[in-house]
Image (cartoon, rainbow, N blue to C red; front, side, top):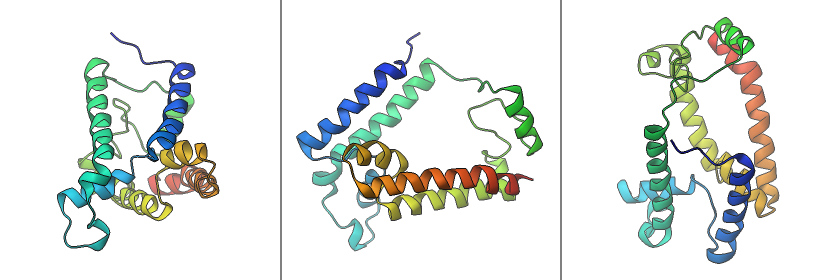
Length: 182
């Protein structure tokens, strides 16, 4: 069974790819840019924002996105994950929040079709997904795009965005999620 690259090899490789994309093709490395191209390809609906030549401008980005999905599928097939191993303290804290199913990658008590009928499940998946999508569009990129490509390009806006992402993550982790799940 193949093993993933250790962080000390994968990190520098990613660190070389990002500047190479910027220098060679003036291409920003990020997944959120592909959302506009997907919308333009699937359902342009006459909206000016989606009225661009997605084949010329975004085909490379859609190929990159397809590679992410293919790689994730192959990785899941070659090395399926039965359960995440958590510390006893983390399990106790999550059980205190009402999460008791630890059999997959994400707690099924919150992230499943059955959980969508509950207020915490609907809030986490639907409202949270909408807010992530809106935030990605508003910030001009996603967390990985700003943190990897934007910071590699020394963009002040990416530094501000990354600080905002981390600050928002801390507020959500320590304030919002405990209130929502109790």
